[in-house]
Length: 233
Image (tube, rainbow, N blue to C red):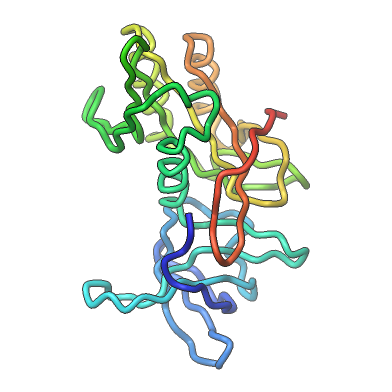
């Protein structure tokens, strides 16, 4: 998934009200950018961090910049926009680039299901059980090389796991797809200490037949694409 507008480098001043971030551009101007991430962004929103912003000239948007990346001191990147995994995965699913899901020809995003919920992707193919795919953006890393989810308590995520179990019980296929939006991690684990309820719900879901896929990403100021599958820790 290529960025529609070339990103520009800036320095983070502060993130506040979850969806706002004050930044200083390289020419010295201070601007406010939209932060498309409702999570805690633990370790990713410290003042002074190098960030990459996407400018826009859309008259319908109040803020003219969107925060897309954090650039770490070691040259690695983290994608902070939680809408990116869905867009990147849609492209990969339609191109049949995810081997575990490549047998499905029809890809339908944001389909209603369960108890007033929407599944990120419903995959269908004649002769195969329908496949419900829920996508999570993973950006937390508290140990070198290890990515963790979630970065804060997620009652919504726990609900989604319960909905996936119901799909399996109904004879369908259900997949939790964790996309690691960091280039400095090669392993994945649940952050059980942050949300033990989610971790317990995940274990129940796996026992019920919900599948887990973990994939890395390749990130640069030009594009974010899905990389190779990763093992759990």
